[in-house]
Picture (cartoon, rainbow, N blue to C red):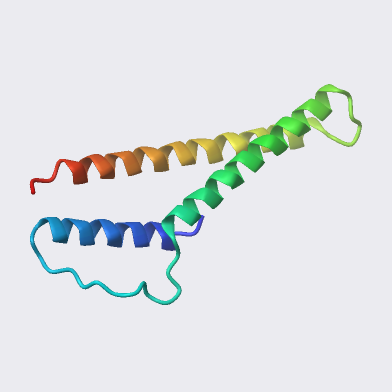
Length: 107
């Protein structure tokens, strides 16, 4: 997963916190090479969905008796899909926590 998007989100959260604290925040164009956090998150969600779909398809092929699919590959792909889903849940939990922290800041 590309961490530049996360770093950009942290930077935006700090800017918001500074603005809420009454400090002047420099408004300008985004820095060169900056990555849109929403785009990174959307790409990650699509990757998780694709991994789950691939694992599900392999499991169905194995259940149907496809000789080209072995049990080890099916199990590894199912575990990869599970881990990627759990990782996205943790990212969501952190984002919700950060949002709640920002919303609870005194103005």
